[in-house]
Length: 294
Image: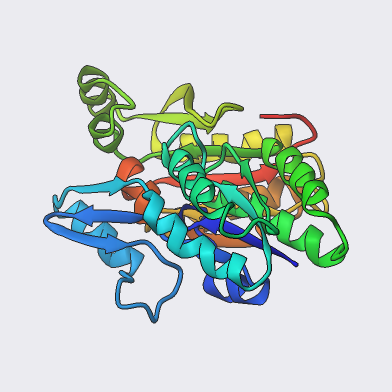
């Protein structure tokens, strides 16, 4: 058997994780002086509600993240291998974290102990529900074709991951400034002039600023326009909308997409603390599949 594994940065919801038996490796984050674990499992003692997380960020509490270390990967991978399953690991973008190097270290340690087992890691070059959409497509494809080999499933995963588009905007540039994505001067000027960036994630998994528009509503409209321009199958293709405690804006964008395509988003979900630590409350993102790479 093949077990699909991903990171909590994919922002998948617990019901779906359970439905497709997906293993989610939790990333850690800090809020002020406290450390937490990002997990979709609301019953976990390490779980924090997204709204509370963003409430504290708005109140000025500083958030940050840490990589998944090799021992954490070992703890996650080994029970799967011991149960006799191979692993397809759909990983958080290497353009945004160095965690994949630690996953390789864990596998190097485990492969001699389980010589009959295999692990293939696919760098999705994706984040948040963009990574989640890629994992969703991989899991649904595997459910429809359960006899696929690990290599064939990995080939599908690599191909579809590159076609998942991420378009997003942030509400306050100070969080991108804090994470080094924009300069201090640009953040100050942008705040004074009410400038909102429209960004996407490129084929290397890096955040790229595409344009700057004046005003929140215009930035949100640009997200729907990018979907209209680039989405491959507007009638049947999946659409995910992610938000950092900005549900009203997410519904506004969903209405815009409906006006342009006659479709509603398949998922309006939260962007969790790991991504939100860097983009900040009010972040709004649209994810979909294009015929072409990003």
